[in-house]
Length: 121
Image 1: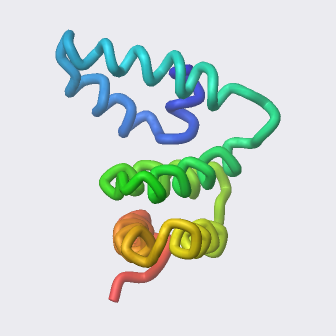
Image 2 (image 1 turned 180 degrees about the vertical axis):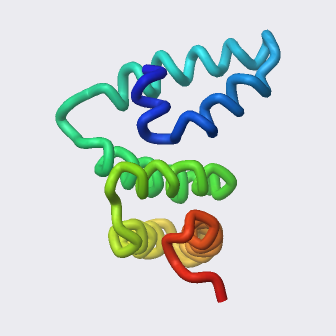
C-alpha cells in the first residue's frame, strides 16, 4: 500500500504525513496504508485515475472539503484532466445539491490553482 500511496500522492506528502504522526496517529496511518492504499487502490478493475476521480466525488458528497486538495493532486498525478475533475464536480452539484457543489468547486479551484493546473488571477 505504501508504494501506491507514494505513486498517487507523492513522496513529499506521504513523508510529511508519516513524520508528523506520533505513535497514536501512526495507528491511523497504518490503517490507511493497509486498507485504503493496500486494498482499495491496489485492485485492478479501475485504474488510478478513475479511483482518484471517484474519491473526489465521494469526498465532495460527504462534505469533506478539506480533503479535496489531497485528491486533486492525486487525480492530476494519475492523469486526470481539469475537465474531468470539473465533470465530477458537476455531478456532485446535481446529485448532492448546490451547497455541496459550491463548496467543492471552491476547494478544488484553490487546489487546482496551487497545483498550477489553472492560472492564478
